Length: 401
Image (cartoon, rainbow, N blue to C red; front, side):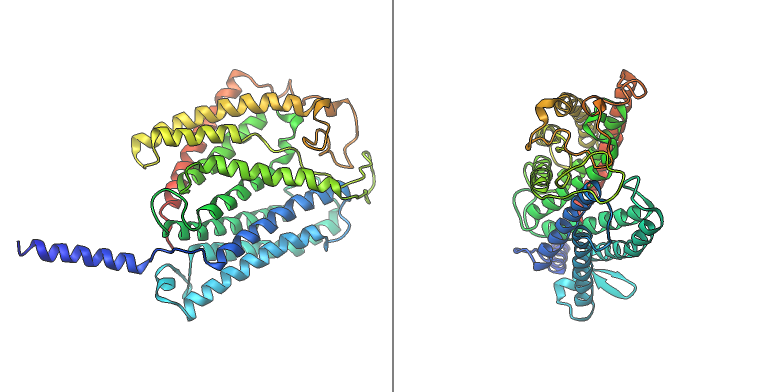
């Protein structure tokens, strides 16, 4: 009896120390809104910049689209920097307890990641300006300076996710709406949109009957959707992410053509008269809904057998459902029926794209045909992607600093 009481008191003291070391939060701090705004500004700038290049060309570095991108980087960088300075020099006990030490400074893990992302973004700016002065218009989205910029943008948005995760994971029960959970899936949807944008040149509707598009999709998207779904506290996280992604992309599809613009860079093969919008969003909503159903049926708890069962079921459902819905939807998108303001049909083609019959048909059907072997490769990629997504999500679910 005498040995049990001290042990019990020691466990209570340890639990109390742990709970006070990293306290739960009941409200959303101001910096969470700032990093969400920074991520929104970056996504807005990316879509706007691609539209600017597709419509006008590259006339100057000081375009509004570029300013939106770098505003997001500056907001995120200054916000992360302030959090580090605050936790280092003027900390409250809970701020120091929930911080990570680096080079003698203290700050939330997400703040450090956000700072690194902002530095990469701002470093890419003069590099990008020099590149265009030397070589002119980009042939591809991922030119060397754009690759540096993309790495910085991804890192900054990942830092925003970590800041929101830290808040969410210290804010309440294992499931349900808690402070930070809504902003977390919102910023996750921004990350999904950014991933989709970076492979735009391989994902046009005309390319969606070729195997490469589905290989990219099965490798890239399950990883992110599964990780977000595993880490989120919402009841339908993957579905919510897909809905927000669709809403953000549709907003660009519908708003950009309202603004008149003309090309300023020859040769002009397609004389557009308004800002060129992006293509209609992919139908992630269907496999995302299936993903949430898998989590609800099999369970969200972590465990060896449960995780491997989730990997198998989610990979199969994502591959099969995304193939089915996107394959048939792309038939509609390349048809004359989609040529309206809502679906944008062929409206994503740039001023440098020469008009022709190829706009209304699928490309690379012979060189890159969808065969049983290609579908098998897609399934294997989805299995690896889902497994990595679960590992990543399991780690994110533990982030508290």
